[in-house]
Length: 217
Image 1: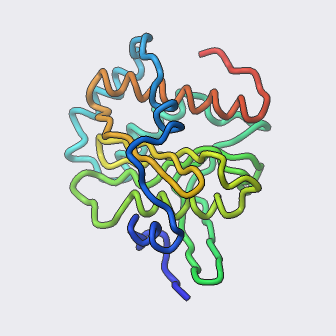
Image 2: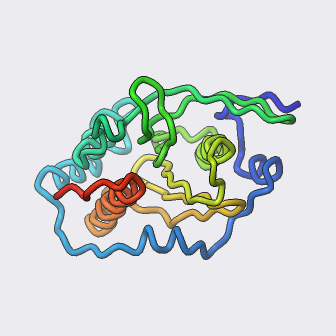
């Protein structure tokens, strides 16, 4: 029996234990990232970008979270009760015949009122660039595998993201394969503009899954 908290899992460990493999061309990831980036950044988002560019080398984890990530994510209106909600710092437990793992998910969108049910999108880590002592992809993957094992349809894509300082990596787990995007630099206008479109596409996927109208931006 392997007993290990989420933060100690490497992506290689998850691959070996659960039989998943990274692929270079995952259609669901390509589709998610292949959004058009026509709308310029709002003044609010541009101000966040500028602040990140000036301070990312000095912020600790909480400062990165509170001064950039939280206000950036709030601007998308992801907290939409009673349809779905944002949950933060929630514990999850993975239990199989060979693995027992428990960990805290930093941020996720899911059904539920007090307890997250049927997560749609995960965001994990947001470590400052100068303190990356563990494997953020491994932590994200073990959480996504946990949810996949509970899902009625394990082949349905799960969407997630991990953050290291200014860099955002988008991840899709689908059945036994997963794909990881290139690094998107949130201090760069072009990359941040694309990130905005990717996150709006995430919201569109959630509304499509739940049969809800897409809210106007």
